Image (cartoon, rainbow, N blue to C red; front, side, top):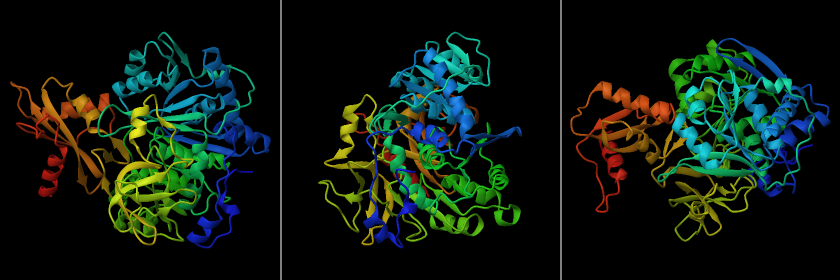
Length: 544
């Protein structure tokens, strides 16, 4: 039994679905309980939950019963280390079974999962752990610099020896014993924390309640063409520290008792490896970000000839996909390629589907979500550009920015939550994305604030000033470009460019480095000294 399942609705078009759909959010709900405890009670423990493989050729299969056993043992270990309901625990791992076990265990314990991208460097991780007050971080043993920096935080190390103070090897979980039921949590109780960047200031923690999984279900079922079906297997190459993987694929699929593929890689995204993995595990539904789709098209001209794919639905989002790319993917990868739209604070609020797909738009508001384009007074607009907004009370809407009520308040205009994007809603209800309402840069689906990148670049001894913008790119949608004023005594060079790029990769994230660096004599500023990034963006647009 599922709280929400569109397969129980009888509809033939969009209007019928909107009229018949009603939310069914219980007062008490726990994501981990719904995925693990409930599957065992329903006799589904032997169903496959995770297919695991890595680039070294290791592979294994885990059932829901095996996940539950590992989860119970991890609860024992966490309790022994003082973790209790309401505590924040960081998960800093590649796609692997330990990642799933950790996330679900924290939910079952009544804690808050802090998901951290495995691509992030030491400064970014340290900030998130300290700002959230996380008691424990579950992480890869290979991240030695992070382990050294977080001396006062308990670390549970996967694939590594516990050779520092406050460290425990994840293998100890297998030695621990215990049988637990998930704690009783309200649907409104906090469960998940992501950090997202804005145009100004440090990254903000986006806190979600247990209900956020249920809020994802209708859109998930629609972009995967009425998932799940009997033989469905789900996969995404997206970063498992991102809501785009956790909310869009992992949790909904496991909620329905369907298997996911965890493919762990340490290197760059490989189109050929991705296609091979989907072929091997007979993946039927995949969330593939636009940048990954572009790279597949560039490196594999005809996937239908080279691979025996079973894909019946692909979803894509995080940035504009584009009509040409969608048409190619529908010919070469899957008969259905559907866009959806949202943000970390309010995910999956619009969707395209085979019943009402309009290529180029981000779709119509998904059932149960009231989405509009509004003006400065909060009035709805039709065929006029305005801000895309989501009505308060939506189950995917965040609880607020963690420890930052002032920033939370700024995101609302009356009863409307402002996503931060400009768009147009046409007379048929389709929404068309028109650009960012602020300086946030979207690169490969990741949302980056310029100040976060600039603060790292300024750590280089040669840099006097820096301004960062997003620049349009045919392959990636956007790339990061940095304009740098050097200190006296330093000169531009290719070596210096490489040094700065490597600094950002190691300190912040591998996807956050500036692919282009231009050395300039001065930066445009206002009379009060604020950077005028819009002038730099305009300058780049005029060049292209």
